[in-house]
Each structure stands twice: as structure tokens, then as C-alpha cells.
Amino acid sequence: MRAETKNLLPFIISVSAAVLATVGVVLYAAVFSNRQLTFDASYYFVCYAIRDNALSADAISTTVSNYGGAGYVLGYDGDFYVTVACYYNESEAETVRQNLLKRGLQCSVLNIKTNEYHFANADAKNGKLFSGNLNTLDSLSRICYECANQLDTGKYSQAEAEAVLEDIEDGLQGLKKANPNNCFTDEIKRLIAECETTKRDYIYSKDMRKLQIAILDCIINIDMG
Image 1 (cartoon, helix red, strand yellow):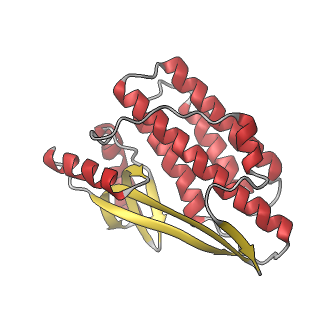
Image 2 (cartoon, rainbow, N blue to C red; image 1 turned 60 degrees about the horizontal axis):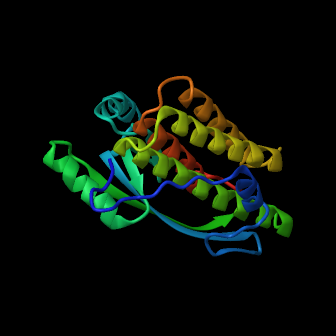
């Protein structure tokens, strides 16, 4: 699912950098003010089915995975989307969509933009922690993306993919420690469990894309209320 026009270089974040991000290293303009956190990001999901219901989405997610796509069912704004892959700019997503169309796979591009998050606890410390969480999760999603690209091109061995997965899990463990009991806690535990499941078997690019989208799901749908 790699866009053919771009040769992406591998990128591995260190555990220490991931933990630093939880305490305020800002990759996006994250602004906390009066129970409101602003985090601007844009994600482009290549989806097999648009606005499906939960049952039909689950039914075809395995088919998409067998085809080589992520197969992750993303819930958003009351609809369900069976995702093939996710990109950080529109041109890459559209290139992949066109390539899949030529191969007979009907896909669309879903653009989801994040902006304002609202939460009840207006404590500035919480705002800083939550903005750090979002930045770190975004960074970890990009690591998954880069690893998937390297697996697609054969530049990563299984040992290298496993090392990247360990780094991602370590980053999530850092987040778990920093968020022992808040709105992020259960989501972080879910992502750690996803890492554990992924590393039990041979790691394919689709597995890293599924983990990438699972992380982005947290960013998009986290309820801070």
C-alpha cells in the first residue's frame, strides 16, 4: 500500500523521546485553554467501504486483510469504515486509491481532521499531559507507517520489524505509566494488547498498518469529557 512516487526513509523513535513527548514536546500546535485543547492534525484513510454498518464492516474486514490491507474497522461520526491504509497527505492516499482501483478494489479516501478537544477537568497539568499524549500517539502512528513501508519494500527484516514494534510498545508503556487513571488509560492498554497480539506471529506490513490505524483511532475518538 506504499505510494510509488515516494521513497520513505525509516524512522525509529527512542523510548526516551516518546516519554519526553508525554510531558510536553509539541509536534503540532497544541494549545490548552479553559477546558479546551487544540490539536491540529489531518489523516487520510483509504477505505474499502464508506459509511457501512458495524455488522457488514466486520464481515468484510477479514477480506480486506486477506487482500493485504489493514482491515481495521474505524468508527467515526456514527459510521464504520473498513480501512486499507492511512496516509498523512492527500496525494499519497489518492495515488494508492487509484492503484487499488486499477486492481479492481473499490476504495475511497476519508479525510479526518482533528482540532478541538473538550474536557471537564480544566487543570493546566492535565491539559499539558493530554497534549503530550496526542503528540506521542501521533509519533508512534508514524513509526508504524514507516515500518510498514519498509516491510513492503523488503528493506526491513523480521528482526528489524520486531525491534520497531518493541520500541512502539515501550512508548505506549511510558504513556500508561504517565496516565494511570484517566480517559487515556483504557485506550493505551488496548493498544499495548494490540502490540502483544502483533508480535506473536510473523509481522506483515498490513499488521503495522492495522496498529497505526488503531493508534489513530485513539487520537480521533478519545473522549476527554
